[in-house]
Length: 373
Ligand SMILES: C[S@@+](CC[C@H](N)C(=O)[O-])C[C@H]1O[C@@H](n2cnc3c(N)ncnc32)[C@H](O)[C@@H]1O
Image (cartoon, rainbow, N blue to C red):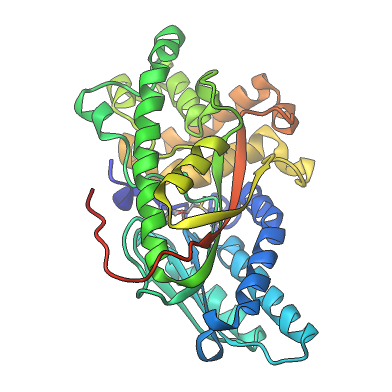
């Protein structure tokens, strides 16, 4: 399953849209604010990186709705505050928002126009469709990259599982548990490959001393406790119940590979250090429910958030009858109620958000490089 073909969130502004079901992701963007502000101060203080008073900020995996412009808005506000304190005019700012081609860019453009009208230093605002696992920007042109809730999406599901027809999930819990180490290993390898490439590409596109602040879903622990320690765990559990109850085809369920993977903090640190283009400025582990209104943490609200993120992928794999998605939401609500919706409040929940702030290493230049192994 190639993510480029299938990955996008539910479009538009309907009840089931990502725009109306992204409170979890919005909470993470708020938690990223201190890292974003510190990165902006750093970029602005480093006069040599601000060529001719221009600053380029790009968000990767912006989706659509209010969250699409949330991080860049934080960046603009921090820039204005910084120069206000210095009693200097802020630099001209270019904002570029990226996502995969099937994203609802019509809506993103409207949000950008509104943002540009109220923020004077923004002179250019545009969208950049394409995969963040490919080159997107000219060499040495971007001052700050940011990305929230996106980098756990892989470029594709692990091919070795698909080629060897090893189902990633199974209706039978014992089989699922036994196979977990093999499945998790394959996902971990794909993530390492993708994230390494992502770092190389962004280092090439950043100015020297450029900054990057990203957050992605991850695991609290390196231990393979159970599938629910994996980002795909709950969605796979729900679909497994649906397959066992005959709501979806079992053979189709066995050939499903959800292209998401959440690393542990240590795994992420190791990949960044091994790749070598960036030095780590700060890493944080966030509880995904912290700072959230409890009204957003009911089984129904969580099920709708899952629908907004996974519906296009589920439709693509199982066919787009409304029944499958209705069944998905009903089953998700039941499962989440059984597990206790309060589970999301527990500090020890296995899924966490990992927020990382990095600086382009001084030895990395913007010269030609190859992305082949
Ligand atoms: C959960 S949304 C996050 C959106 C927004 N940043 C937020 O925090 O609410 C994940 C986004 O990442 C995008 N995405 C996934 N893989 C991508 C890739 N390879 N290149 C660009 N965008 C990607 C998806 O299309 C989706 O819009």
